Image 1 (cartoon, rainbow, N blue to C red):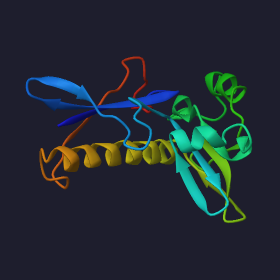
Image 2: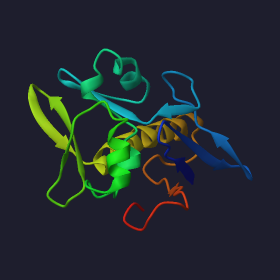
Image 3: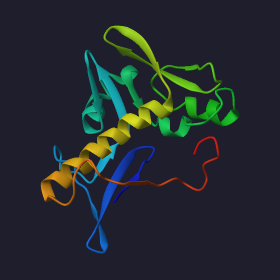
Image 4: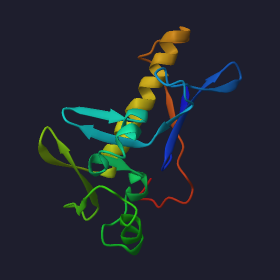
Length: 158
């Protein structure tokens, strides 16, 4: 069993092992956390540290802090406040929530905050799968996840 803590800035993942919990390190960087951001560069999608390294020079194509937008109506006062802190372009989706604009393969594409956070979660899952294979602890295809959800989130945000 592994647990994910998805944060606005950084996300963490731990594994239940031996009666306790161990932080899973990113095999590429050795860090205990993964930046909660996604960046699109030419024909590649970068998640975590790779996206963070692109955030300054490719800021229009880097989705950062979008967890704050999950489940928020685009026209709400809270959403208006959160938009001030985003660097990427946004628009109102058909369902009345957010979409962030990214350029992918030379075309404009729109992603919901949930899709961006799912990309971050896929990175965390890869970290856990790599850890399971490295430690031979369990079949990497049979992992169970627990996702932390802050108590202050509203029902649509959960």
